[in-house]
Image (cartoon, rainbow, N blue to C red; front, top):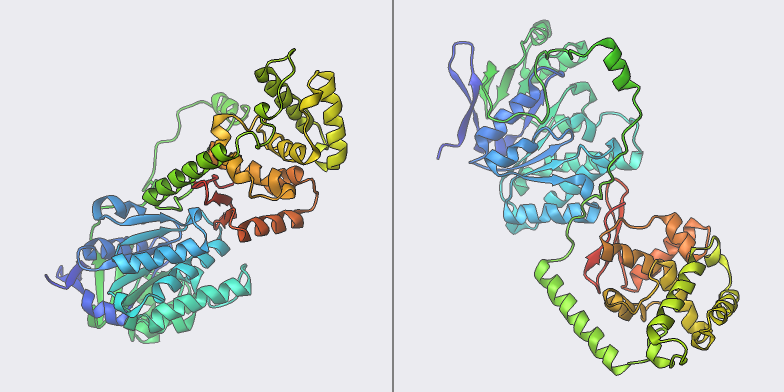
Length: 496
């Protein structure tokens, strides 16, 4: 199989090729203003070389996700993962030699830089036996290797710049060949740009960018004006993988395109001014609430085994400790006037009423228990109130919206709850119920109310304590959305 691909034609119609093997050793820099055809060039390069080499695309605008269907690239939505997961995905990509597109368009600039840095670091840190050749294509490289400080923190800028420098300067020995594209050379860090030995320069208008491009192409300063006159899709190429002397190339056609991009003009709407005015000033439609998908955290087979083991253990414990769980109706015989089912329903209703009252969780447990006993006497079930310890735990279930934990659907959760301290039980149950229902993770305000506090710091410390205890696993993605997993149940809340 030939290691060369045709990217376009020269002035005389002759094909212009890029030697992929040479490119892997010497790297490539592409420059072009917006509208010069820079993304089209990258797409041509990726499509033609897809059968020859693994490709890893850092895509800040989501333009290259369309490579997935015809060429089998795996699209990774960066917004759905946290830092550790992104690094883990990068390690698997190197191990399995998968071609991927890291779509960053769902993130803000600083999160994009941090995510790309952790992803590139994961690629770079692969063990020696996994140093397979791969093209690492970074579009809008000036975002990830800025020449000067911008609107992001110094810590994120240093992290991103270090990752880009590693790929361009030290990536060759690890099989990583950087292909970086930028709108402006002046905004790209010089130590990153200087590592490229191949260049494809498109149209640019600013004098400082034209001069730098001319210098890289070995042109005289007076010849730099030619770069301003280049047409869309026309580039000047130079380098050991392209040509030993500067060559003009018109980039060839492509089979894929960017998502939802309309090229050229479109017919204007035919609606009249009054109709458009009514449409613009109409009352907003209610938004449909969509629960974000949360990536699976556990292998399905392992998850099934874990659930089966836990269910068996819970069943065994239930048989051994029959009558000792929270407010078992069988533990205290019901009075002749009320059957056990009515006693359970009355207890559940009383606790639900108390939990729904404003400020209930901020009251001392002793005061709540006293109120509970009074209400139970009023319902003629006073002999079923139990003691304050059992009440406190049963009340925690009610705060989480579980009025009757003896229902079959809560059996596994009730067994797991025995390992949770009394003061942490209500927020833990609130999280667990969300995971069981497939709902979004409760926010700090909801957890604070369940915990009986107004301090966000206490909620953070509570989550840390539960995580250190092995009861939960907290995950925050690059959009700041939190999801919480319960390893013992094999479930995870949706991100929120």
